[in-house]
Image (tube, rainbow, N blue to C red):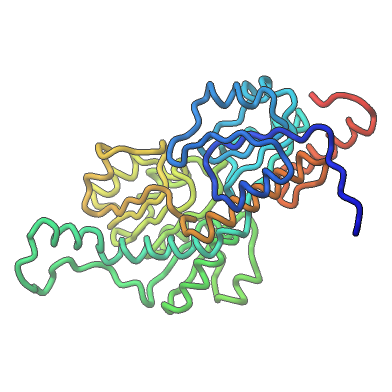
Length: 347
């Protein structure tokens, strides 16, 4: 029988900012002392997060947690921030890197699930599904009539994808089954996507002007903030549909409201919003040509569980001195290794 594995005198301390699937929590508890904000649907208050991370080696966070200089200054032991998401615009990565704090995300896990939701949102908006259900619920369905709740065809139309990363590529693959002409705009051309799907790389303005459906799937950066603004919306066809499954601030919602009410475009399907969560008084919710969802792009049971597991594995690696598999800022890893090797402090 092999000798028992010796345990370190002290285990890393981690804070989990929301109740997560048990499978992921077990991974953390096998290696760390965990404190958990035991709520599933309520973000941890900022004051609580500041206090809890004061003595933590690692943080498991969601998009609702803002990791900035103030928090990092209050968490001198922090080695890693594991984000349960692909995007990490809630984290000041530059500030983390300066302090040698690793940042991780969960790429690849949610690609197909988010592409499914994007496609469902596109179909629901084009065929006015939510509006049609409300007609039944209100008792307004009286008879069949020639132009009753007529929508837009999807099959054979032109799809424009802004942001052809993993999810954008998955959306393009789905479009092949609908015999769509596929246009895309991206920071870099993707010959692999072009060969696989027949997609054509075009300029931003050309995509807006030619597409029947414009789908945004870009990360939120300074360059993509309000990428879909009044100028962009005015370039779109009057029968065009905008689908935003990226991040809310990619779209200027005031400009979108104007575009929808004045007929610049036909409809919009939105899974994300400039300021989340939104309430029932949001102006866009009052428009019949808007399909609105509460940021559920990756919300399948299997995918959300897998995201939590990947984030937990990243966190365990970071607090036990190993390079996490999904490291966003490798410079922080080199900085930390150099400081530890030289006996200095990272700060």
